[in-house]
Length: 575
Image 1 (cartoon, one colour):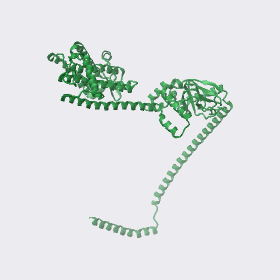
Image 2: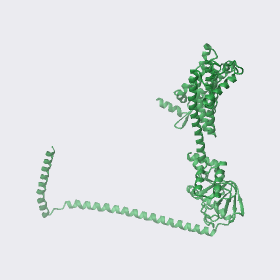
Image 3: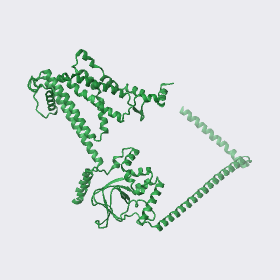
Image 4: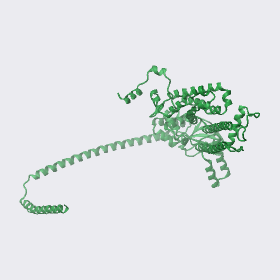
């Protein structure tokens, strides 16, 4: 058996139940357990990045807490070792399917650069403590090789958090702190190498009161490094070549850091503006249009208040554009989770198929109305129905002041006008004036969208028409006689259509028969002609015709001989 067949057999055959119970589970790289483990690995990596350099440059810090450092060092090493074990139990996607075979996972992991870096970060360089002494933390610098794990954790958190822009800013501030921290440690180490207090640039002599304390040493170095890297404060002039080189390196690092900070902040601001533009309509263009067209102040104020209401209350009117990049099924699930409860309140949509409601949910268009704005007026043509999501609307008289009723959240209106119900005395005209009392959020469902969806669900269409008929009966707006007449007319029309279909089928049958008879007659005639031709060949030829043929034969032979000679001459010429 070949190696490929062995692999296929291993993948297809389910693992034994005993191994499944005893072995460690395989983690999904996009799952929660793997995500939280990455966040846990942030602490040992950050510990080595910050503390090891600080201990190497500040000897008092290393000597004062030696036991604590050993404990924390080997705890971080244990976390590094556990992380390698997690890597051996983290699946990967192959053709879109999570691979859980541990042999394949291990074989893939050991062939990557990550495995080599993980091994190098755990090389026991601490063994040199036996020969060099325990006060050389620079032996643990190979632990920095696990930094890619930190970047991976930050990337996962950025994609999962609800505030990615705030996280980017926090991550940038952390990077700035680490750079300044490293620079302050190098500054103190350089001062110790050149000699404390030798000039104004290096760290002051610890013999001076207050400068011998560890906290003061670190804060002074951190402050001095911040002044250099931000170039916002006066620093003493360097006096030695080493000091000049350090300052030049810091200035170059400051320029690069300033460019990085500006680029990152610009990216964050651009992303925030892009998100706002995607969620909320751009009011700048509308304001400019109204200014150019000299729209009156009152109407302009209403438009600005409407935009301000959307912005302050975080309301969206373009949900379809926001969700357009999602797959159709996933977009339907999101829309169902948000709006299905609202749609199911409508009486004519109750007890409908779940798939029908999912289709209708995708067709809902959110709309927001300002105080005093009419949603519809009496006599208007009804092309859509409305479902009140939030706010209050009033049914008012023609004067716009007298209120007959107040509609609140969860109610709906206009549903009868979008369903063609026979016998509807109001037709598809609005029968009342609906005005928004405050800011009202509505869902709009157009007649075209409903018709498009119902074309795939004829049974649901019949159920809806029946429910609409019951509602019209309760409202005394259903003309039963007209309905019966329309039904009779429709039945007569359908009967005539069936008769026409039957006649068309009969004509097609007759036409097919005629074609078959025509083909049969053509075959018979061709057969008879062929028989006649064979019979005429056996007849004796007349004498005058035979003499004419004999006279024509010599000429034909001559012409043929001439043609032969011409052909020979042509061939010899070509040769």
